[in-house]
Image (cartoon, helix red, strand yellow):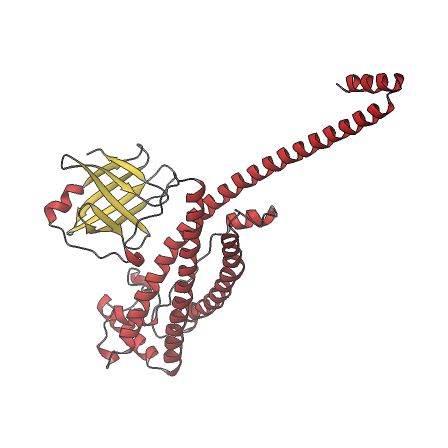
Length: 364
């Protein structure tokens, strides 16, 4: 092709057609420039397409990380609420001497706050120098603020509380001599009393500790730490749910077939209903996704219990499932709904709607 154009230019010069030569040369330059511009445009389109695909991939990964974080946050928040409730109830008792041993242990028990935010996707983005995941500037700003401000603030708050928790636990385990932090009644050689006497002494020791100046200060400080942690975790949960919804809406715009978010009752608060025992027993059985990944539903002590097993060893035994509608249940401590499908009135399958719907067929 280059030889062809060279011959044309040579012919025009030999024939003395200088003006035509220059016009032709200019035209050739324009064609070359247009070709370069088209190539650059195609290259830009390819780069934008690659960025869009990569952004969609990272948004998808981020969506499931955020979803998992909401599950864990719900678990920690519910645990804190229960601990604070028990703590306050024990403190408000008019006479601490009337409290049973279990309530006294609840009074002095700290709460695990070792929650870690999932940052794998955001860290990958940062390492690759990616600052935007979509053309949605509002979403990009939300992602940046979430990981650079809200996550950082939560880490600082929890790191302080965890250090306080370690000091508190260290005192109970190695410094105080009021009571056994870990009951040792299963090891007869370590105690000289009967089991009844041992529990009685532990109870008196707990009362003595709780009514001492140091004990009171530690117990009240621990309660304030739990309340402080609860406020921060609830605020962070709201931010996490907000970002999760924004990420999901962006994914939905790019691909209308995107798996739906878990459908939960208002503000994640399920209201359990009562179903007759004969109805509950209809759900009992084995439900398989594969032979190695399956769910067992049992009926024990008037409760339905769900156990999950898979080939990777991620086994979750005996979680109570509570009905909020006929054929619709929830696992209280997880951000997850469980529902049963029927065929001509008979249960045919069980499904989860967390991280996409997974359906388990009823085997027996």
